[in-house]
Length: 75
Image (cartoon, rainbow, N blue to C red; front, side, top):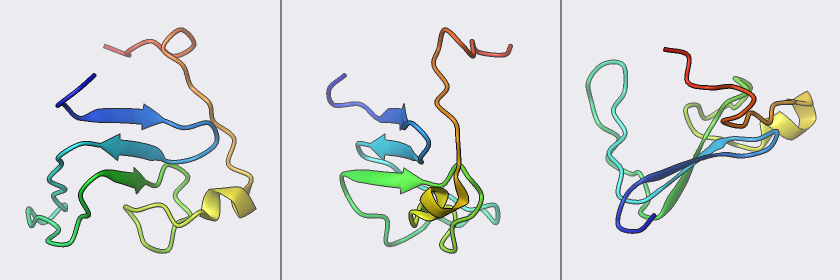
């Protein structure tokens, strides 16, 4: 995939989003300081800087490695 956004599910870790993104909060406001390139978003729920990953999944023992074959799109 080139020129588009790629969301990657990492093994036992965050979602990584690569490409030009605009991250919008639940209040409708966009983050002004989202870096260009790759952003890691928390999947484990333990990060102190959610929605971003801070590596807390390692200490928490987060265990998740979904694949398209194992978890097809649910609808």
